[in-house]
Image 1 (cartoon, rainbow, N blue to C red):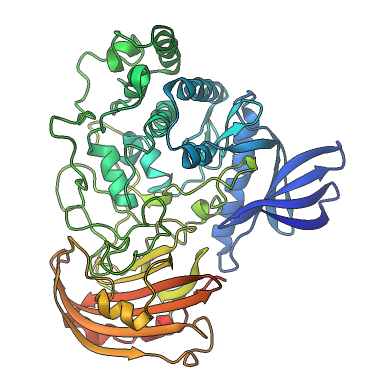
Image 2 (cartoon, rainbow, N blue to C red):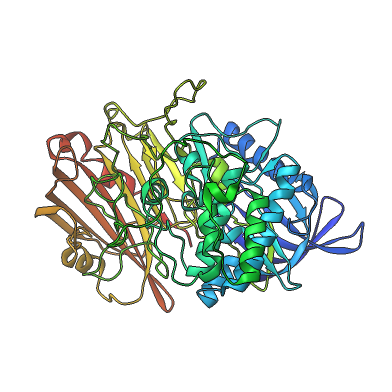
Length: 584
């Protein structure tokens, strides 16, 4: 948090100090001069390279957030005071809540006792009931969007992707926005958003609070989605008497899932008795949604022997993802498993069974990035919430017998366009900026994550960029490339026959713009990786090391194409590295 000289805006508010910031905005403590009260104001800042359509989408999302939250009047829902445009950007005025997010609390304490989680459950269930009565679906309930007020309230925030019953939709055709590990399976399979999906998200949140981690947390969006759809629910070791409530909310079939009223009733019974001998799921749900022969869904509960780790539909290899907890998102020191997998592809599901999920962030994900700030509520005395994997993802609809029209899935198919160095598109995140070839698609994890992937039609040509704060490896960029085989020497990777073709260790004066003064090294190599359709690969990698006071930042930029086509793409590495710049 930082201070800021007082600044009047919109002839009413005076900004006093910055409380937090994210990828696309800043939250301020401010004074409302008209009503003489302290408020919080979220200022949304959009990148200059946004198109008019992307800017309109972002503005619409902010206005929608304000309207959604304002429709719900309940102590467990954030209060919105005003929304206005100023300096061509939207601003949202809300109550200033003293406290931190549930995510902050879990980061400090690890787990919470069942009694405390039960109180959180009651508040969230009542918030969702109030929202549903107002015709509002939240659609992004997770620990980062739940504030723990110093006065004891549990407050649901961030209605940025909520929908209003009867209102216009701002979600693109075939697109889905949110945090996949907290999304209900029916949404990930192309089903409609409804209030029962919010109940699933509450169940995941409660599991996370009592067990210390989301049951579907994975190192990438694709893996998280696969886990939500099919992975068994890991056994609960800390939930105790709260387990029936959590299990009932985590029924994959929405018709078998606990309703709000049934969940509150079961919660009270479990709390009073220290447990429950009653049924959960469809039986606990009673008459609502009960079906004689429900459509079978994969079991959530692990069979003997545990649940498959790393299993899921993406058997062709891990999607390059952000690092785990406590890591900045890039490779740890040499010899450890990298968070990125620069030698392996972004996988596609090859099975003909089940939903095809093509995970593609579209047009820099304007609707996602505007919420890179995190929660709509302001955390006084705590950092801004965030950190969950979020994306605007393209989802192929679930096939339904007799169903109506479904949005068509968007897939990356076809052949790459001929490379044209005059057709480079800009990409900017909180960590770096870089340009990528026209016609390729950005499949980044999130705008505030230090990782991005760019793929060409056909999914056989890939650029990856990642950054991380290095605390252990003390070598140079050239030494990193040599000792780690440019990040491909990772336990479990299906990479072999790595052969260096060319290397270069640049002088710090060789670059004039973004990489000026950095330690930059380069390697070109051939390798074989069986996770690609064409396993014989040509691979280029640049490592850049930046000294920042008492710590070092590492950046790794890689290009990976079929070896048989290297002559068509061998100019890309040099062209894009010239555009790379760390965000300082």
